Length: 298
Image (cartoon, rainbow, N blue to C red):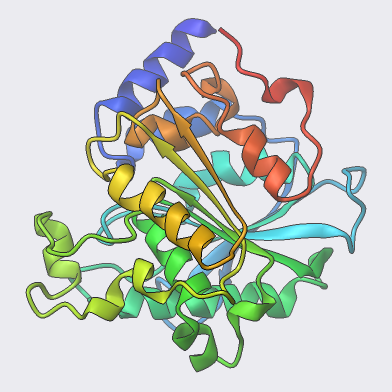
């Protein structure tokens, strides 16, 4: 079985995370009997405005009504990705007692900033409104994302405009989790990101780092020191410093042996041996109990 793990890890590391084949391999290796899935739920009127919900099994702890709800946004430079590819994230958190919402959102070049942020806020509003029905505690709503999805999560959590626009508020969030997110990236060098943000006509207010205040929700920031795509010092480390300076609770975890891609891959059960225990700090931040399988096996 370890050969399969190595193969999956190699495929993940050698291609963009949003590509289908490596993620299909990983998802084929994760358990399918640890959660209940409700797929294809609309949160808006567009074809990309749909989401999947991963719910804990009846016997899972914490009990219904006391579970956190996590809205997870995947990466892909705001130009690729699909929710079904992130089953491994839904499974990992639902198996530990969280209700997990994974939305699609509109992508560039069909749309540009701030359309994908608006979709993200609308999906979070759906999660807030449906938390109790799904067995979650409405006071335990979190947003989480990897890479460009980490940007989406940060913008929803830090820039009140977007939740205000849909009749909600960041005050309803218990916290946010960013995995290798870009929070301060002007001037834009990545060609796909340039299209997504209409560079050079990109407003400074598009940067999450500009929206920090003492009212910002607590944060867990996770980064890979070897990240060649999103600079951890400029983004995660600077975000942590500025949140602390504003009096906001923040935890920063950095890993020596993970890359931009394997940072999120290490959440998957088959890949936790990759080089860093990424899942335990997430589980702890959500107020859930770790299980023995969260340990990194080598």
